[in-house]
Image (tube, rainbow, N blue to C red; front, side, top):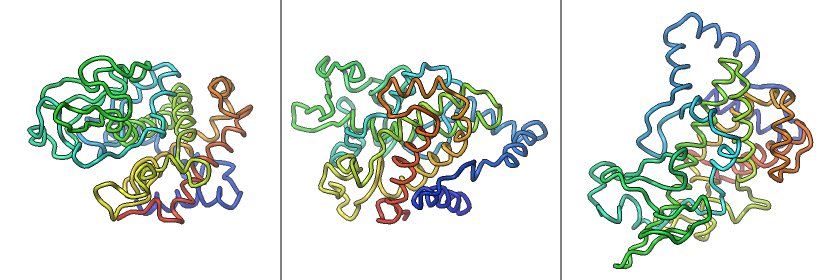
Length: 317
């Protein structure tokens, strides 16, 4: 971890000084060649590739490294573009809504004391599933613009139970999707590309990474999207905790690190995919070339992370 963090500092440090890397800093050709050779020779390397392609079980917001590269690469570009929720949706919520279900109440804490929800963005975008009863919340199709349907609708501001309790399903999803889906998917797609050479993985990784850069908060023109911004800069329950970017200051250390490494993995590939540039331009990104896309990612992801590291908005425990 210390080695990888040092490499992350080198990548974002180059951006801060205006000396953006002109080639991969971590995933050098030599390292990629050795990794591919290991897959050919060793069972342990083959097992790692299998996890990258097939994914790992998920039971919490953090703790697993990969979704399934195969499953997510099979999705259309529009799906990858929409996968990372907008950071205009707050990612934290009053403590009373943590680990509580409208139907099963606090009983769900017997299954998971902090996050008793499953996510399935491919089949159930913008919904969380109760681990106890398997029902999905909210009842409306938020992703399609439906904000009112069903018994448990949530338009992003939460659903209020008859007894006055608030449940923030969409905010819960927005937080969990970043830490448990977006980042592990970037890991899976970027590393599948490096180990297999299949351009589909690199292309899909490029779509998702560009989307994340377009949503990543910063301390310049996206201050209102910072993790604690909707709550006066402090967590509404843990008042000692401020800072943060998409997630809180502690978890952001490894989330942003993996996003930066995913960029390093596909940085040079971007020169070979004009279809990706055309797609992102059609989505409204100010890009005409691979150089434009690199400059955008380096400004809105790498530089924003570097500033956050300097001012303590990203800070490990």
